[in-house]
Length: 552
Image (tube, rainbow, N blue to C red; front, side, top):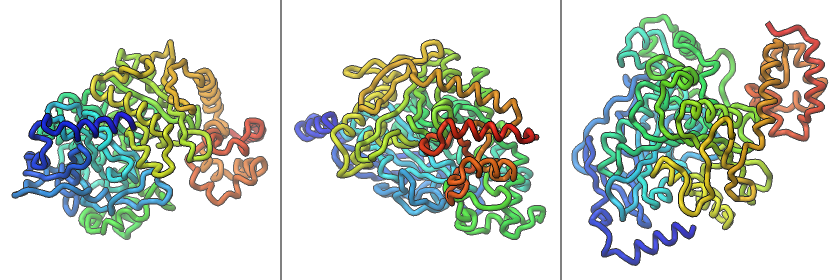
């Protein structure tokens, strides 16, 4: 708060010292596709809704992004354009600020008005499980970080069936030289290529770019770090709750094609008919979305796929990291204290594992855990995505009138580490507690603690995580259904296991919202329901499950 106030006061007090870029005309910028005009507010210039590719509609649905069509005159870019097509859901931690549409490939840029040339660049990649999310949520605004001397960029990428889709006729036609299926990732790469070609016009340094992503955005950072098509497009990377950096349980192109065929049949289209692809492209955007979002995946055969290893756009991230075939750039990696899956889950233990694998390659890594919770939340445990407003210094936007001085202070501390990293490749700087580099041997992380202090320490959960992971490995090797390794959905689909589950947890089996947790294990769910899922009850459940026939 103090940092921001001083910056604004200095800008007001010394207008004569500002370069010409701070005048109103400085919002007019020449790009490769044409001139644009943005806006200026409180010492920050911004441009929103800049096309970085052609609208992926009609014949360009399920195609690699194509170069934006040039325009004449000056294009007004003061407002966000549409987020990508999806069905928003009420409990989204970052509600969209625009109406979703299929025409959505637009970027947004912020930069300080009083500082023009060769500024470090940060590129934000949103999450949403690859089915939701967009660049327009107010919590993702880049003004507050840009004010501190960087260029902040955000952009949209296709999600849901628009972002990941394969179909035999698409594979046969192959209009984009092997770039098939992973269209959302292709959008991310196209946006980074656009940044490289155009960011100098905004005063940014194309050779000093940091990519930052959370959740699906963090997974995307891992994918971009290993994709052959994105090498050289960034110089640092930040993974926030982005999993373990491995392509586990993914599907092949042929399997994703089968999912595409399921979707065609759902709409009465014979996937083997010669006009099948044309008929799929003739479906409305609402028909393609078909109600899909994080809370609704649909019934029956799978009709939606996540990004998959295709060998051209995306490679197996785990194998690439292990073999050293990735962008060896400085990285920050972490998760929240009550993240999805609990301590031993994909996010918390996953971040720890990814930090270890990457630091083993000699790459500088700084690992963190975000444990702070605003007093206005009223319950302990930093939930998934709760760190975003602090990293982006947007706590006042997120919490409004409920924002406390402590919230602002934590935001200033956390965002200062991020700004230092974007500017120098090292999060440390004057006035901040020293954040040590990560190594497996020392296992030291920065905990943005529940008290609001930044505390560097050996991971206090490290030993417990390792012990749980060993138990999970033993459980998998046993072939039995267990609370540690078996998704709840698989238990419910097995009559014997469901009966055992109902015996020990009748209140859970009869919960109408249990279907939302089908992909989670009881071990992962324990962090959300600690009073119900006690270790003693889980141990008793596992003892009875162990008497069942092993899973084949």
